[in-house]
Image 1 (cartoon, rainbow, N blue to C red):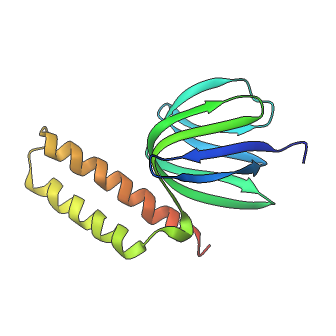
Image 2: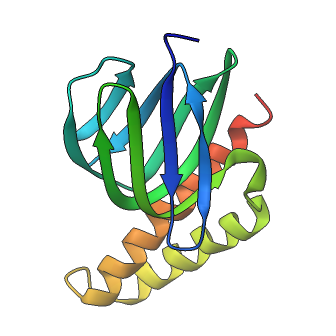
Image 3: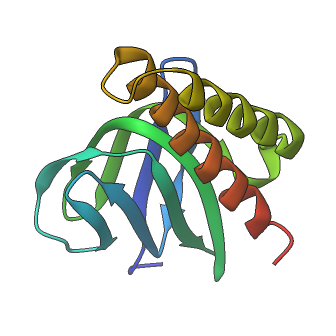
Length: 137
C-alpha cells in the first residue's frame, strides 16, 4: 500500500520485527509519539513502555525497553534493548518480576542505587503485564 511505512525493531539479539505498517506509536522519553508515512525526519530516545502499530488493519503490541528511534518519511528504525510481542510474554514470569521488584523496593533506602534499579525493573514488569493483557482483549 502506498500509505505504508517500513518499521524495523532491532534488539542486540535479533530483528524483532521488519515489515510495512500503516502507523506506529512509540513510547518516547519525552512522551508517546505517533508516526505515519511522510513524517518529518527526526531522532528520539525510547523509554520503557508499550509500542504498537497497525499492520493489515490489526493493532499489534510490544513491550519495549530503552533505546533510540530514527524516523524518516518512509521508515522507522528502533534500536532498543528488548522487544516482546504481546503473545510472546510469559505473564507468570512478568508477575513474579513485579513481585520481586516491589519486595526489593521495600527493603532498601529510596535514595539508593538498588532502589532505582528495582523501580526500573518494576516499570519493565508492569509494561510486560499490561501488554500481555492486550492479547486477550
